[in-house]
Image (cartoon, rainbow, N blue to C red):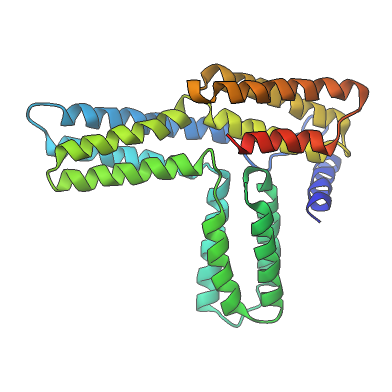
Length: 294
């Protein structure tokens, strides 16, 4: 079912798109990556400003607070460009509607949700589990069991997370909030420690390999599901994956560089297989699983 739906969506996109617009836009896009980097680097700079202000002999409490509030604001802005953000907000609105109108028929809404989650399935490590929950939710709403569906929707909402984006963003946000709490308590040293810990995920997203790895995975998934529909389109995605993984390698941290290099080699080998049409689904899956293990 998953493969059929994705291939169908790609086919429809190709057939009805303009000749020069054959690239499908579902999932993570380069535009989203740019915006995540932009807002995260602004959050990083403000976090560094807060750390510097806390290191002064006389700490300007108000200035540090402003820096931390600004950092949190930009992190929240960055989160909105994650592929999972819209889905979580869509589920949130659906839960609210079910609470307000418990006797309505929500089968169409669940089908829409299933399609939208399908579009970002390549970014989700636990998509199979999510899909099983969605099938259960769909059966519940067909039977009018909206309360049970609502409870399951809450579970699905908590499961929507893009590993290389949402997790470090959430980690950074939580640490900045902790820094604010210590600041209010006058514990400046602990506030500095929390900010220092937040720098790692902030740097990982804004200037290291995280976003390039996420983008590489996106291209691989699109290449996989377009392979049997449009060979040249699939190959173009692999070319983009090669470009993206090369960038990931050159900006990678020391602890992940060797793993990324192995992925880079395998993607290049996969690209060469396109010349003799010998690509298999396992070729894609092996590389995607390597990326998941990072």
